[in-house]
Length: 277
Image 1: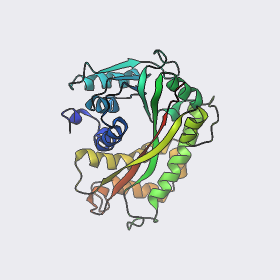
Image 2: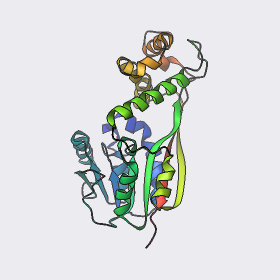
Image 3: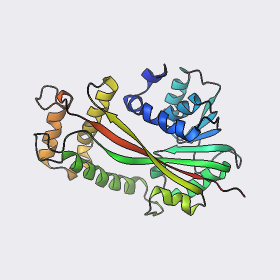
């Protein structure tokens, strides 16, 4: 791992190996000119830089960009990576600028997803590739029956999160252009070819390092943090009590005391190639 990893938040530290594997597959030892559209706090941009790629990262969140620039300053890639405050719906780049456009966990925040993909397509060179990372295989870590409460807790949490996400999206994207299709359909509707999908998996077993332990706790803690909003209305009192015990270090059921945890989930990416004229 690179020297800058200790400066990442726990989520990025845990996902680093999967992101590195994903980006190595995309680059295939090519030094591509990359746009990271919605770069957040900058980890994927730095991993592309590790592959020898020049990278421009854009985001509309000034706070995230500040953290990305601070992280960049701790790396040897300062001349190779640039972070800019811009909107992916109106990119400040000429047509056919980039070999690869990467966008990760961004499009579900965009009201008009087709318009966004067309703008990303515009700045791709002919035969350039667009990569969309959105979701994947759900994360599970506990046995289906772990001796507390009703079996299947994580399945109910998944259902609650999906229902909360639907409400949240409707509240934050009231003008959303309805698009009831999977992510791969965006490539079809915008004329990409050679459309592919691949899921990269993460498996963690005890003993967990500090970042992994925080990753596990956060997943259950955030449910209770959202309990005052829409999330909690989809959970029973019994399930909330179980969550409290799982998160209590003094409890016999504290989750990090279990030796049978298996954290497993998949990060899916979709790619398509821009047609030559």
